[in-house]
Length: 319
Image (cartoon, rainbow, N blue to C red):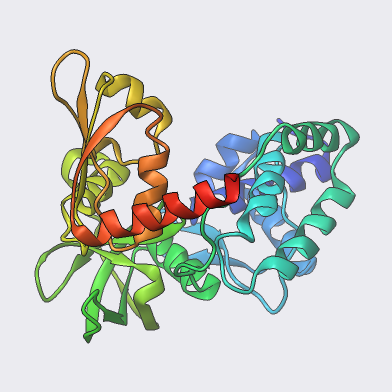
């Protein structure tokens, strides 16, 4: 039994922050106390300003709801380190988040124990990020956080979605997972009108709204959201075709390229094909440059023109 009241209160707060809802019996078991003690501790948290709600049902339960102000968060060592590292890298992928991210990082690092500050600093110093192209589509952080909450709470949402052809239509869907790939964010959701899984790029989502309608989650085909989204992205129609036949085994190329694994196919023991097709010519050029081996190219003329222009400029710069 946890007899140290401050320690037990912090442990209770930490538990409430890790899951949407806990039953009173589960909390009592985790804390090693009686249900009556849990109820008293919940009241103490409420007196301190934490918005703990009681839920109805067969056993009843508790959850930490949103309030007028955000209460202090309790993070373990791994969570604090992961949060600090994520904040350092988030600004490059979200619109308008640079200053906000740095403020949040400063607050976090100020209260980190010395051993964790050292770990975070060492990881940051040993890590480098290559920025190829920063003018592409960016994700609205408000949309990202709202969809993350909808995925967590299993809440149906509505939104307007603009497809690659520029046509916009209203959608109603059950959001299941968010997947990041190549600087873009994708929502994997079950669309109501189509009664099927659909993938939506978040930079094309507008007018997002919750419905307060809860849904029962479905199993993603293959049980791997990231693999499912990767396969769909690889199979999607693109503007420019570019297929490279590389004179190296598929496994060797797969380890060092940014190309989707599903687009790399063996073509014998010492060769493979890499589908670098896409909608963005500089992105195609970057994928080809990252192959790191000799290759032949089957590509649209627009791709070839772009590569010739880029190569000529590089040669001119090299003298």
